[in-house]
Amino acid sequence: VPGPGGASEITFELPDNAKQCFYEDITQGTKCTLEFQVITGGHYDVDCRLEDPDGNVLYKEMKKQYDSFTFTASKNGTYKFCFSNEFSTFTHKTVYFDFQVGEDPPLFPSENRVSALTQMESACVSIHEALKSVIDYQTHFRLREAQGRSRAEDLNTRVAYWSVGEALILLVVSIGQVFLLKSFFSDKRTTTTRV
Amino acid sequence: MRDGRRARVGRCRGGWRRAMGRPALLLLALCAAGARGLYFHIGETEKRCFIEEIPDETMVIGNYRTQMWDKQKEVFLPSTPGLGMHVEVKDPEGKVVLSRQYGSEGRFTFTSHTPGDHQICLHSNSTRMALFAGGRLRVHLDIQVGEHANNYPEIAARDKLTELQLRARQLLDQVEQIQKEQDYQRYREERFRLTSESTNQRVLWWSIAQTVILILTGIWQMRHLKSFFEAKKLV
Image (cartoon, rainbow over all chains, first blue to last red; front, side):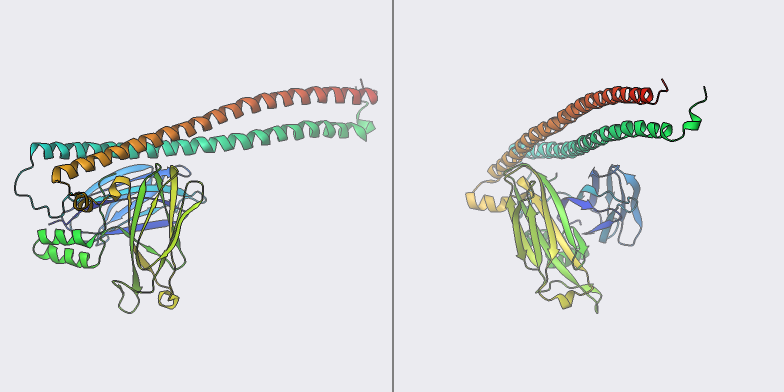
């Protein structure tokens, strides 16, 4: 019988050439969902790997930007999932993941309902579920917006540096060309008399 | 995203009462271990940081529990006194909001006053470093944000609410969180728009500047070379 469930939502920074693993003890029969998204860094991709207590790989994807994986725990024990940025040489990545284990705990601790919910209570429950999905969508939207904003800010700084750089190179090359050309004609008088 | 779990042993016991048989023993073992949930391993001097992007006036509650690796028994000890974790929270501007030392088990709370990325950093700060030398530390962590940080049974007891009133209160809290998130989204969209407009301006002015530099240097080159060749009597 699966025990009380819950969810863990964590955003963390994954340095280059690093791997970070998280573990959770899950009871058999619990339905779990792992969802992850890369928010900032490089090509916005990460390797993800999920293993069961015996070490069997349940999910393995390389260089994924976003994914969602649902599974039912086939045995009791410690499940492990890892995010790897080992393929990247110098970009740090910010990764968000949401690991949902089982159902959410009930509102009332001594929940041992034998009687059915009243209409009002059922209405409240369905509104609660709908609002949960609204909050869920808001989170996904916020993450996508964070991605877009991070790219826009990168573009902004890059435009600044490259513009200044190009202007300087332009000046240096123009002036340099003239002096180089002058130097061709300065000393060797013998080469200039050909008509 | 979904309704969070609060790290309370009391609620764990409720779950045990429901289950029977062998799974109950496992649950009991897990409950005896304290806060159930996600954990990770941390090295001696390692610092782990987590980011929470939150709207303003949002409460964040973090619970953690640490266990130390016992080299002889090859198992993680249930709890070790003398272990400590230093928790540091920085707001989006880099200002330190919370910087405190907690024991091997702790709970930290802060409320955001500016919207944005708050950084929560944990690193171990043990009073008995010899115990820890070369070992690993297992950290159970649970971070609850906004509406998920509310403890409904406690609110029901404190305000003496009926079941229906408690459900209505939960819905109100959820809607409030949605509203705050939407306000935050408006603020973020404005920032994004300012960044895009700044990029637009920069591209425009620097392109004009570069074209002007190109034309001016071209003219200067021609005049300079012309006067040079005239002086050399080649033209």
